[in-house]
Image (cartoon, rainbow, N blue to C red; front, side, top):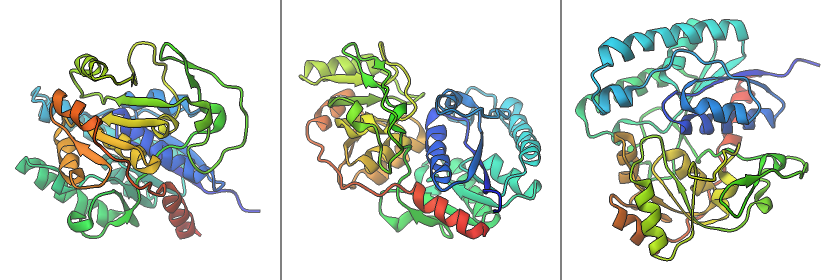
Length: 343
């Protein structure tokens, strides 16, 4: 019997959402018998470790702080760190000797050919998401490069296909399912309690029954602001709010079961948008970064999603957003395509 395929999964280090979506991809491979090694670094590392992995952390890069928020460190910090990250990932890939690398990280995409490893890209990042001319041109060039370097460029999205980049393969949204034993129950104080259910892994979120019904699930990103004021306004409107990362909340390996049990989820980042799409849960998006604003523009006409740019707008949208039609989780398509391609 031949050895199972060994897949390297690398997530971008800006924001935890990159880690959770690539963890979803890793879960898809493992469910089909492959072994997985994960790298990435940044704020998503904690979630990778919560899911039982020992991740490699290459040099981190953060263009949101250095360019979008203008702290002046692009040339002195981000650019040299980008070169270091490519070098680090090349060395890691040579040590791991994987059959393929799957990534949403532009630097890992550049490293894969240098390490002579087949490359598969998975990202929703596209030029249409950016108003800033420099970001749009840079993203267009990066997308073309990754399409050329990769065997397949998977493009997970829920909006219309009109603005999909040339050469990508559209798939459904990707979301991290949980093993039943991974999921805690939300305690009365908003925290979590461990469960002892050791039932086998199933295909949807699994473990959803261990999570109580929730009203409003607030999922801020690393770049969100005014969350305390938002909670106060929602509660003043009579809503019961569970705030991820707030007081009493303990990190959980997978957020999808909680999204499934919520009446509505409020978020700013696209990973939670994908989870809401898979769960079929109403979703209100309040964007902050350039990319989040771009996602918001594309979601504005998608059933089940509303975009709000103010506290008042969020409160109003929470009360009027219908549930979307659930999407099939795209992790299955990625795993099946890559493993079939390697045979």
